[in-house]
Length: 398
Image (cartoon, rainbow, N blue to C red; front, side):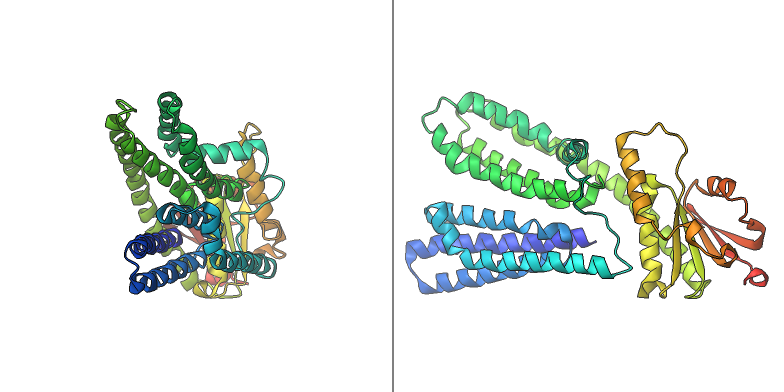
């Protein structure tokens, strides 16, 4: 939800940026004062919506430098001035958003240090810059999503057919270099931010904006130079549309599954809240692969106001004893173990006080085999979709 809201706010920011650029050109041509006044209003609205997007999702905070660079570049083109002069024109915005970024990141780290409800999906540590982590993050963003499938061959063909043109050096300086900087400013911070946990999908939504902008500008360049690029203008757009249709199909299928799971999770959480007290001990049992994030989210929900401030929620990772894991699985295990320190089953002082046990899918038998002291006969079992919930029977409560 937060990613979708951020993309809406970013879209509105881009809309008012476009209006500002248009009014700037009109003011240069006509010299009418109200065009300049309206341009200032559009710039203000651009700043407001960009500011609001940073309040919704942390990954959009580090997107701000790229968007400001985009504004500087486009205004330099629209006003036919040097990039340095455009940068000077936007100096106030740069100072304001620089201070904003530092402030928001400082607040996040402060909240992380003092809060018991902070779930650390992202961070920068020793694992972030491991070549394997960076490679996997890059692959998931650019290869899995298909952007490089379009971008790399297209750029190769453009270079092959345009490098002998007398305008090529100027095109590289004024078009391809700024476009490359914009692309890197968008995707590199996102890759670094999520390289530690190797998570992707909706979390890399800001990164997809980089691929999208690059493809759009390549399409404009191809259209402007259609005669020199032979058959490329004919096939480029249909190929992009085909790739988009594949992505939409996969996204729709995943969205339907995600929505169905949402109803199940809501029912399970509601059942737990209704059948437990704030001081009851609740144990959530899950495995690292595909369940670590939902399990930690369940804990965060139950311990917050919406979950009736449950004070004693523990999360037990059930790790497969098999040592034959790839590096992604090893990373999943390490991250889950790190994020459940101090809140595992062994940290429960009196195991008899466990009032509720929530088992994720296909995990109950392994947990009970490892902990035979847990007597399920003392509990009432309730199946909620892919979850199994055990509530201690009233006559067996401590």
